[in-house]
Length: 139
Image 1 (cartoon, rainbow, N blue to C red):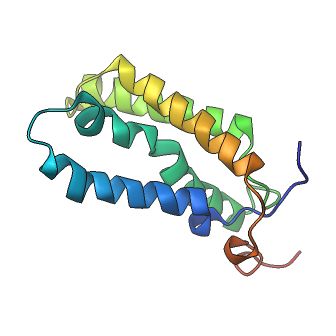
Image 2 (cartoon, one colour; image 1 turned 30 degrees about the vertical axis):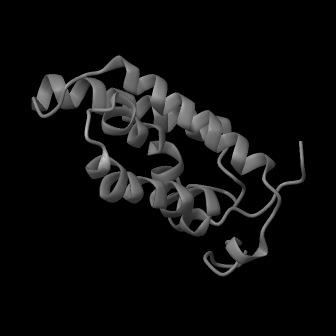
């Protein structure tokens, strides 16, 4: 595995690209589609959950001292968040809050997005522009 590099949290290129893709889908792609597309209307955003949301959570954990370093997200950090988010979005929301519909395909999209993000976070070349060095206290 390549040498560890500092993670840029919300300035990370994978996070920024995911947020950009989410807004492009919402503002440009969905309105331009004249027919319903199960992928763009229902699952594309689900694939972006981990790469777009996890860096914000990890940044807060780092600031609170709950995360020991600025390494890219570890597989167990992604897995833990996937488990909690899946439970919340696919059980608590639909069953307890009656606010959404449980779609098992969403879980596959969360997992696929998480695996893709992990691969990108660990195997993309290091970029100094997105480094976290100025985001966290020294020490």
